[in-house]
Image (cartoon, rainbow, N blue to C red; front, side, top):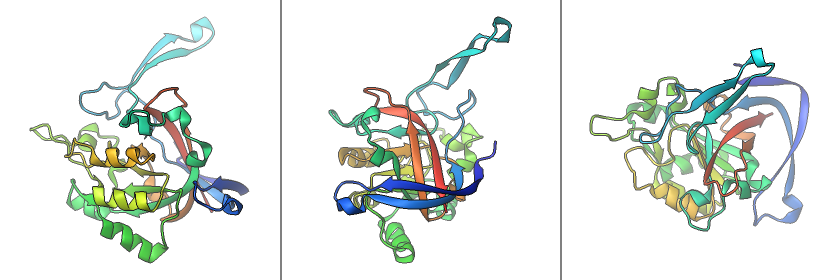
Length: 258
C-alpha cells in the first residue's frame, strides 16, 4: 500500500487553533502538496496489548450470495487509535465529544530514534523538547506533538513491538512525566507516539496518561510512517470513530504537507 501521495495540484486547507488564541487567528490557510498516511491497517496478526485480545475478522457472507460482509471483534485500544480524556478521567470527554479543532491541527515531530534504539525504555525528556524548540521554534498551542521512536518499523513483528520480557515487563519508549507537563504548559491539544502507549512500557502506573488526559488533552497511539513527516509544518486530519461514550477508538490519520 502506498502510504505517501503526491497531490496533483496544491490543495488549500484551513486548520483551527485551540482556545486561548485570538479569534482573528483561528483560521490559518495551508497549501498542501503531499499527504502521508499515519495509520496501521487492522489485521489478525497485528500486535495488541498483553491481556487484551487480537483483532478478529469473521466473514458472514461472500460473493456467492451477491455481496461480501464481515463482522469485526476488536478492543478500543488496538491499532492506531485515540485516547480521549474519558479513558482515565471520570466525567472526561469521550471520543465522540472531541471537536474538529482537536482533530485538524498542526504537527510537531520530535525524533528520538537513535536514543530509543540504544535504550528501549527511553523517555522523552524536557531537554529533548527544549532542544527541538531551539532548532524549530516554540511548539504551537493547539497542536499535536508526536514522539518518533522508530518503533513503527517493528509493527510487522508483534513480539519485537510489544517487547515483553520473561518477567512480563514491557520495554518500549514513551514520554516522561516532566516532558508531558511541559507540553501541557505549552497548551498542546494532544500527543502521539508510534508505540503501544504514551507511557514507557515498563511503567504500568500510567502517569503520562493521567496527566495529559486529566488536563483535557487527547493521545494517539500506534502511529505509522512517522519518518515521512517533517519536524514541523504538517497538518494532521484525525478521522476517529465517533463512538458515543467511547474512551478510545480507532482512527484513520492523514498528514498534509507543503
